[in-house]
Length: 227
Image (cartoon, rainbow, N blue to C red; front, side):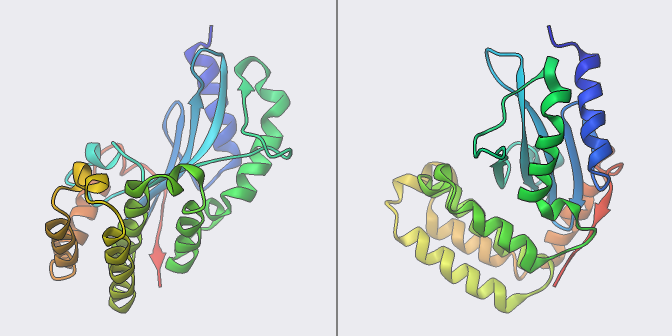
């Protein structure tokens, strides 16, 4: 049986190796980065006593922190030196841990940056388009473009916003509306509402700041997103 103490020891080991991240829960390490939460989650695998680390990104612009954490912008698997997903037995954590840390630092190197440029963040987001689960998911692709658009808006790069919105609009038109409207509603209305955030940028920034002040989020280490 995997006890709470074992999980606490494991998250402590991960925390010791990722000094820029803060412990959020006994299986989650996060940091604030501008309009996003970035971090590592220790995912317990079903029907086993194994875990694997994953690199995650969440939005900070939703109406409250609960909604922000309901759905990530992306989840990126971490692969071992043989190219396979990690399945680390909790009982043998110490044997596989160092390799898992090395692979995580290499594959999610952005976590080691104090402040992060929008270009660096976009390089990470763009890599997600090649992931199998995103390639097969219209919603997954739209979600990444939405994050890029709002990330550019956060740093006030309006020309970048315009270009990203054009790509998003083109992508949306390529799909049968049924693939997206179950999630976003009528696409023309959703696109217009998204574009209108440019006009209401102050409200967008204010909501992010409100979410950052949530008592659990406020304790996290913070870095900035810059142009």
